[in-house]
Structure formats: structure tokens, C-alpha cells
Image (cartoon, rainbow, N blue to C red; front, side, top):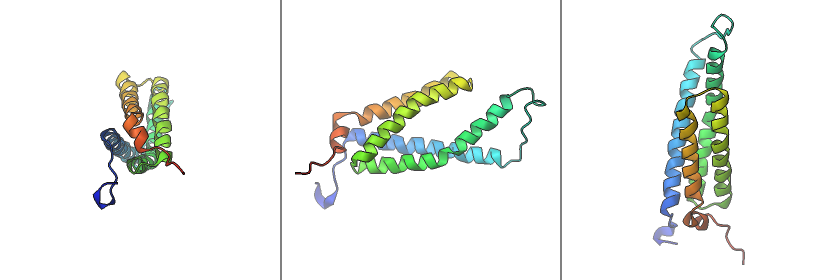
Length: 146
């Protein structure tokens, strides 16, 4: 342990936690935008609005609205990973694996542009890769109970 009771945090963990905070901020911003759209009083009527495109738009914003709690959880996990807690490291791996697999599938179902499919997958792969480095694994390893 370093002077002052602080534990050294490896560079890959610091970069990953910064990514957690950045993605959490983007998710929270999207959730606030979704809340604004939902509170604006729009009416959904797919028949008179030319199909289900508008309904897909509203469903997307409903889905994004639920990202605000997830953004909070992501920032919380980042703090805990930085502290070196093993459960947070495992939870983060599960979260990024989920994002990396579900985002392209959801984007494919909603016929989103390619960038909407690729960017989250690249972010998830980068975070997963940073968390799997030997330094991050050692930093978040289970303490030995000798």
C-alpha cells in the first residue's frame, strides 16, 4: 500500500474507469433527452403516421429512458473496480459482454445505421479488453485467505 493508505491503481484500470464514467455520462444524457421527448406530449398513432417507424422511435426513447439507472450502476461499478473489488470486476465483464452482444442485435431489429451497431461494440470490446489485462486482473483479484 502506498503512503497515505492509497492503493496503486494500474493504468488499464484507470482508463477503463474513465471509459465507464464517459459511457455512463452518455447514457444519462440520452436518458434525459428521452425524458424530454416523452414529456413533450407527442401522440402515437402508427396508422395515420405512415406505419410503425414513429412507434419504433417512441419505443427507442422508452428504452433509452431506462438507461439512467443503468448509467448510475455503471459509474458505481467503475468506482468499485478502481477500488479493486472482485465482484465489481466480474459484474463489469458480464455487463460489457451483454452490451457487446445485445446492442448489435437490437440495432439490427430496429434497422439502425451501421454506426449505431459498431460503436457500442467497439466500446464494449475495449472495456472488456482493458479489464482482462493482467494488471487489472491482479488489481481486482480475490484476496488470499491464508
